[in-house]
Length: 140
Image (tube, rainbow, N blue to C red; front, side, top):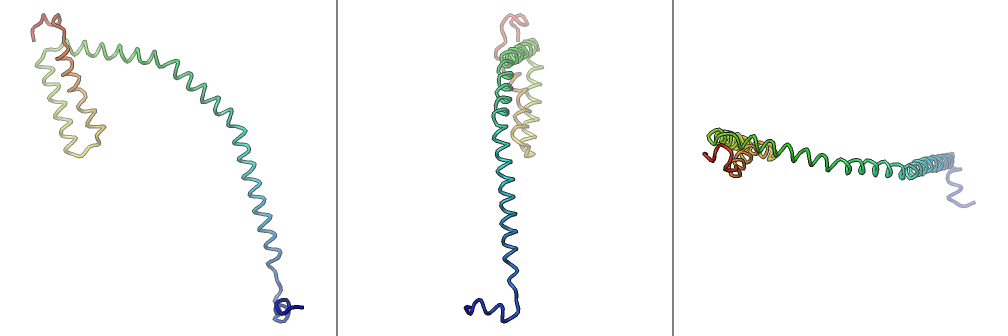
């Protein structure tokens, strides 16, 4: 018997960590098996998830042309409606929009909000600039 083996016997201590190490190793193996099982299940479901995503993307792609067409029609109708308004009304509309956007900008509003506030001014200016001469008899 060596001195390192004799020392615990001489002091009366018993090595109880041997069983604990085995329990920790078994618990670690059990957790690793659970993780392997979960990863395996996820990998098994991956083709189904990809097929579902592909189907959703195909549906969106089929609907995009119709949505673009509806947006274009709405924009044309809005432009026509704005072009039929008299210039003083459009100028007032643009000035109110620019004033609102400036106030929001100075107040520290997010840029997206400021952009949304100035959009009507851009639309009004565009309507005045692109107005055909036939609307309002060419008088501005």
